[in-house]
Amino acid sequence: MNSPVRLLWLSALTCNGNAHALLNYPDLEHWQHRFEWLYHPLLPSRFSLGELLAQQPECDILILEGTLDSNFSKAGKDLTEWIEIFAPAARAVVTVGSCATFGGIFLEGGEGRSGLHFRRGERRDAYDALWEKSISLPGCPVQPEILASTLEMLAQETPLDLDVYRRPLLFYGTTVHNGCTRNEYFEYKIDEHRFGEMEGCMFYEHGCQGTYTHGSCNRILWNNVNSKTRIGQPCMGCTEPDFPTTGLWETRKHMGIPARLPAGIPKRAYLSLAGVAKAFHIERFRRPILDPVERYDPMKEQE
Amino acid sequence: MREEEQPSKKEQRRQQIIAGALKLFARKGFYTTTIPDIARSLGMSAGNLYNYFRSKELLAQEILRSVSSYLGRRIRYVNESDLPTREKIRSIVGLYFETALREPEMIDFFLRIYLSNREVFREGCEGMVCVNEFVTEIMIFFDEGVARGDLRNQEFFSAFGLFMGYLGGMVFLGGEQMLPKPLPEYVDEVSENIYRALKTPEAS
Image (cartoon, rainbow over the protein chains, first blue to last red):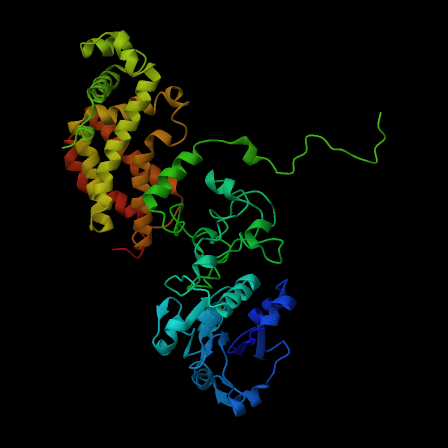
């Protein structure tokens, strides 16, 4: 058997949401056999933080979680020094979650904060030397399957096609809208949604960002069960550089026109199609999905 | 020019029918204009005209699409320019009044046929379907005006009604010979009124 791939998980300013997310990977136990944790904040690991600093073992993949902060130290050493020690020998550096990738929610809380290569969407050059071997896995948190599968592919030395933010296209090449169970309501421009209900598209009134957020939430379901938009909560755009935006529960509009349109769709094209779709009243979409015609009741005595 | 880029003879004839019918509808109204009237004005038989349009309603709907497309293309030209919002309003008002003078039947058709005979357009022109090109350009104008911080954000139809209702009203007054001055002389004041009504308090 090949020697295990050595993983080192470094946490910066973080809620540990990504570290926890990995624990929800259904196949975690089997998946782990290929890897060895030099350090993970929650899983059994070969070294403590102090031992890592003392022995400085080489890792194959360095995983960064959390917003980088120039004043942040771990085990008495600046985070930047940790990266300088462990990144050069690693063959890949993976930023997990939106904070490590773009700065995320902690960005506004202090000076000198950023993601590894980006501050929101703006490229920074502090770690240019690592650019070629970096992979971005944003999300709040990252989907466990995306993290586990990417690490698996890195372990197998599978080439990964990336976008401009170094997100693997396999997982971030389509939008969250893709696979959403509300697509019919989007096509015919029907919102009429109430949070948590099955009916209606949340793009028009409720701030759903699924049509311009790149991710796999409706193709790889969370806990193999569901997604935000399927259950009736708008997508918050957590894989994008500008996450978190404000006013997440309402759609910002200019004279009734959504201020942000589905990814890559020209305004003229969108408005033309929307104008046509809105002209028709389609009764099926105005009724509850679970609107019974009759009920079969096994307890009822058959006549 | 390649052959397929030239409109076919049939298409050219179709366009002639649309133009001829537009004139008659605008002048005489929808119900008093008949298919034989239209055919006669074009020197063709009514039977042949039916080869192009199966009914007077379908012909009227096609005219509406054609008018909307004409105005939409002209407003699109304004939208794609670098003009400030205030100047764009002036351009749209100007082109609307100019159309009313040079192609009076187009605006007449809009006001006297489309808006006054809704039953003709109920099936086939649902909602904004047949005026989509025109309305889309007005939407884009508003959207960009708000995005630039020039126009006050509000519901689309409250702004649309103010803009287009005002222009329609002025053209109607002009058509009824009730305006003391020619229509183009109202462009500046009408544009300024629309801008002041729609602008944000901060915009100059």
